[in-house]
Image (cartoon, rainbow, N blue to C red; front, side):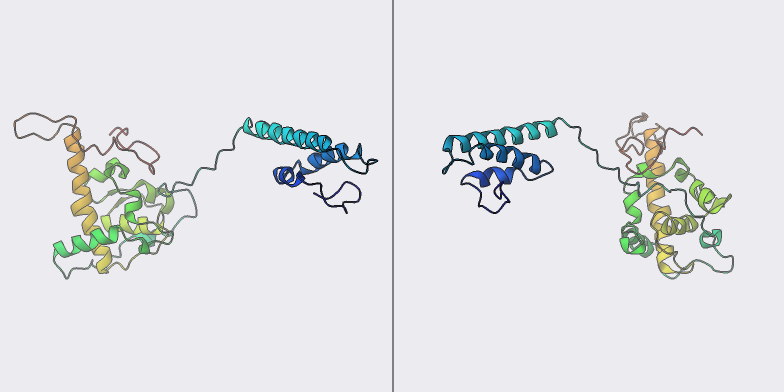
Length: 254
């Protein structure tokens, strides 16, 4: 702190500690209060140590009062992060990007088991996206699939209807292309590519079958070895926390 008279004289000893505490929007008020005490002693050749102590205590009181005031002010909540999995309304996409051309057959050149393993790795590969997401970001658990996922492909896909106007049953590879384009903000894969075939095979042969089995198990539709039903299976695709879905997929009535 500079002196009160033109701020040319050095601050009195011991004042620096309190000045550090006075950093903030109220610094000017604190300095004025401190200077008012010193002004009373400006006629004296030496300042009374007791006066300096009183000024310091007054400064400490003001800092403490300000801290108490700030503590009782309501904290501003941080803005909620956008839901990366929910498909937001936006610019419509060209339906041709998610419609399999009739003259391009899907890839078929390796065993199905090889495609499934490659599809599993691609399902967790964020390099397919433009926003750092992977298929697994939204579909790490079965809870994030809609009830229609239990229906064999082709079946209607609501998100594609909203964003691309596709009002028909869609095949699995077409749904994969939509997810690459919209939630993951990436680029569609070539229709005859091995990568698209692998992802589609993994979705249908692994994830969809697991989902169907879990739904049946939970609903009591699966017979146990002892002949009893299991209405409360340990794998409940609708009972898990769903950070991405807007609604409970099991709450939809068919």
